[in-house]
Every structure is written in structure tokens, then in C-alpha cells.
Length: 292
Image (cartoon, rainbow, N blue to C red; front, side):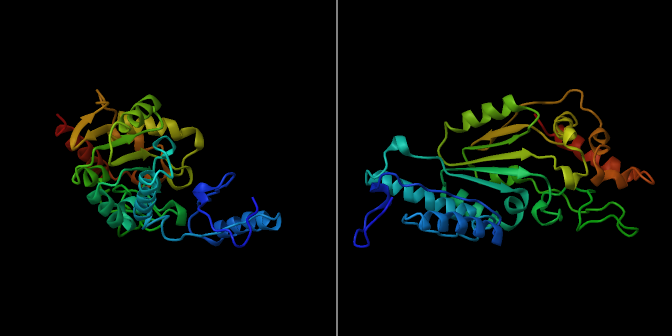
């Protein structure tokens, strides 16, 4: 597409406009990739805009999503975009941004009732920077920031934040937990969420090969064990009303889930930490005792 210098026209009125959006983690690599693509197109005689956006990939994603949603609504109102051409606004993030550094902007989007989908890849650590502990890291897990030592043999001493309940306190229309081991449940929940306008959350249990010290062949098995032991409840809430989609009966011992993961190996070897293991099991019992 070639445009004379004296022609100013909205991109939405042009034909054959190609938009490429490259997503990265704010590093130079993704910026270089975008620059290479845009430079190649420019040298081929095309009109090109290369516009890097930093910050939205972590702390500011819900704020950026709100800007996109507002822009789409304005274009629809002005008949620049038809309702049929409208798109869904989706934020895909990790548990670190969701539970920690991006929580304030997410709370603001929830408060404003932003119509968007928020998908959380919960591998229970800051995996992008070497698997440091996040607010989602479970009690007694080993991360690069919570290495078990003689003084702190349990590893992480903090309790995993309950992102589901944090969202539920805002009374959004739809929130859910999902698992790669239960794809039918995932598909049904995505379909149901489309009935609602407003913030919609999906928290995906995401066994992580390097950080959890597991093999790729164990991912689905661990995801299933997370549900079968009660560690990862599959549930959904509509305007705050919670339904548990699977109530495991009988529940498998939590140790069945822990023993397959290197991040919990210190609880079993060289000496079993019975008190910590019992505490982890007690927390699961306590959760399900309160499920009606």
C-alpha cells in the first residue's frame, strides 16, 4: 500500500491495511523483531508505522486493554466498525503480574466493569526471570528466591494468594479455574463466559517443566493429580456465586501430587518433613470442609 505524502486518511477507511502485533516481555529482542519487519516493509515501498508499547505486558495490561475497548466502542458508535467486526479484548498474563505487580491496574479495571477476558497462566512463580517466588507460589515450595536451607528447611513460608477470591470480592460476572487435564470443562467455561458482559477471569493450572523440575510427559498427569488431590479446585463463580465443577471423592493424598515435583523434593529427602507435609494436607482438608 503506497500513500502520497499529502494524503491523510484514517487507517480504518483504507483497504489492504495489514496490522502485525508482536508480543514480547519488554526486552530488546521483541523490539528488534518488530523493527526488522517494519524496515523490510518500508524498503519494499510501503507506508509503515512501527510503534513499540512498553509497560502493558505486565503492570499495565488491563489499563491498555481498557484503552483498546474504549477505542472499539467509539469506532462502533461512529459506524467506523460494525458490531459484526467487533473483537474481544483479551489479556494473557502470568501469575506474577496477576497476583503481584499488575494487581492494582486489574482491580481498577474490575471496578470500572471493563468488558474483557483475563487469562492467567499460573505456574506459581516468576518463570520469565528464572523462577523466583511470586504471590502465587505455594507454601513449602522451592524457588530460586526460597531455596530450602538449614534455617528454613520448608522453603517458601508464605501462603499462595487466592486470586479467585480476590476477583470474586469485586463481584465480576464470571470467573473460573481451569486445567489442561480437563479440556471439556475448559471449553464449556469459555463458551459460558461469552454470555456475560464485563470482566471475565480464567486461572489455568500450569505445571511448568523447568521450574517444577518435571518432564514434559508429566504435565497432564500432574494437572489431573492437582484436581484429584483437591489442591487445584475446578470451580466457577457467576456474580460471586460459586459452583465447584468437580468434587473429588475420595481425594487422593496430597503427597501423590508433591512427590512427582522437584520443587517439593526437600520435603521428602534426605529427611521427611512430616510437620510440613501434614500442614499441606491439613490446608486441603480445611478448604474442602467449607465447600457446600
